[in-house]
Image 1: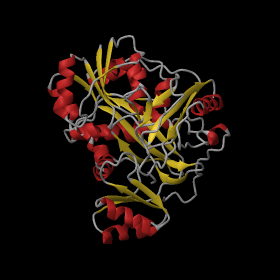
Image 2: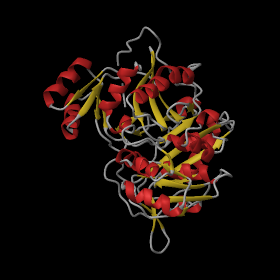
Image 3: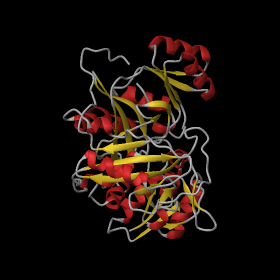
Image 4: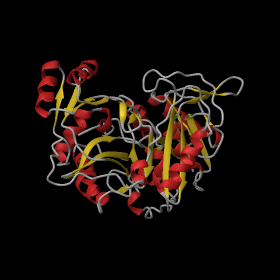
Length: 425
């Protein structure tokens, strides 16, 4: 099988490693890829947001499967263009990708499908936003209705800051805050059949102890030893299958990767958001534990044969990834710094490029991820931090507490009877 992987970040490097390890994948091409991906794939240049260009490349290279990593190409209709050329594609149509492309659309689908989620208002002016903020109270949750690279959500006790974010975005969804630990569940689907992957948890805030502004994600771990028994089965029953049925009812079936972001509240799991692709950095830890061949799984979803796919196999133990971020991230990151010590297994490239002289340079906010597995969560965490410690990047920073609470057994689920009228993002 010849596979074209679209994207250039840490998620795509993790996908590339998984695809390259699948014996059925005889040739892997990545466009545009990154220096890490170059170690396992042929790189091609393409405008990933140009449907015709990506579809043309797929035909030119004679690939059997296109795997789209980031959300922007999906919302732009790249999957539609690829399928129109008769090439199997893992990724939803532009219409189905609105589950991520529009928070308001996703809320509408959830309500129609009876999915448990936070109460919310879609607001387009200051008066409407102010009314919604006052109804729900602090902490205030304000989400940009459109794509924002994982940084369009503000959760704050500062009403003025919430109003300012709404004004900057224009169209927002204001939600009640959901109290409880968060879970990311990836579900591979062909529109009918659906297969859940291992739940993971990521860390959105830039600083230790969940302090500072939201980021695209500063680390993640899997599995989650503290989740309630039967959580995945419950989410599949109450969230995933009703959502897929509603999308089919609308004539826009969702096929690809449905990312379900959850808060485990006192009243049970509640959906914070849907995404239309693998999450970053959770993909790094989930795929590190997946033993089943990745290419075969994604091809089954892309060709409508997922129901016949064998049950997934998972490796024992745990996985942890720690993100190394550039100076000033999540603000405007400093780029162009020389990176050393990154040429080791487990170091995932997220924002890097090669200089003319071959030096590895920083080229984004989240630059690298140290991803490691171990017999237990503590061992995986220690190995991931050892990888990060071996990398030198001037001015870089990382969180030092990824997976710590889970290792210490300190992740607490809200007890029933407490005030649970509170969705974060």
